[in-house]
Length: 206
Image 1 (cartoon, rainbow, N blue to C red):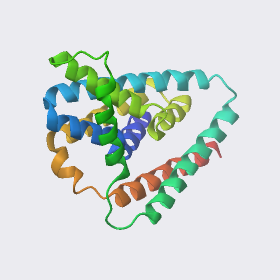
Image 2: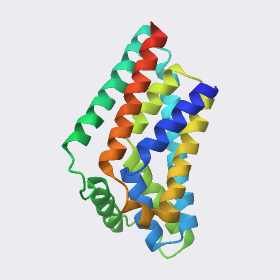
Image 3: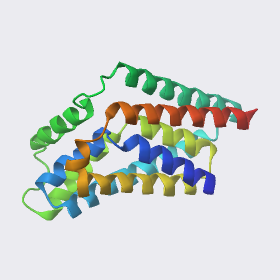
């Protein structure tokens, strides 16, 4: 369980820094109560983690050799894609993730069904925007892959803690930190981490 916890904690914490959900929390925290934004964002990410782990456990019912091959392939593909993206980025650039997050927050005004002018409204807004942004994200797929071949409780605990750490960083000092985050450095670090996980999975299978 400790291995699963550590792997998911590292993967999520590094991958989510500078991600779209990170910048959504940053923007919302500049407009609303940081405590309420943190509550909504963390709840959404925790819910997504549970869903991903459940999907991973369902996938684990497939033949183990298929799961193992898929896990290795996913990690290597994600790693190489991130390293390629990092190579194409200039040393300093405006984050595309930040732009997409700003657009998502602005588009939330069209959510007529959300209550307005209350604490619940802020929590729900943070929850909905974060949940939608995280759906189908690279970290969700990676969590599913980890949960398919590792301890489900360890993955859930590690991933949830990783998400909570990133959300806390975003709402507490996000405005200052966001301007200092190097998208290229984060992409490079994330790519290397995915490649390491892919290599470890390959060696364990061998």
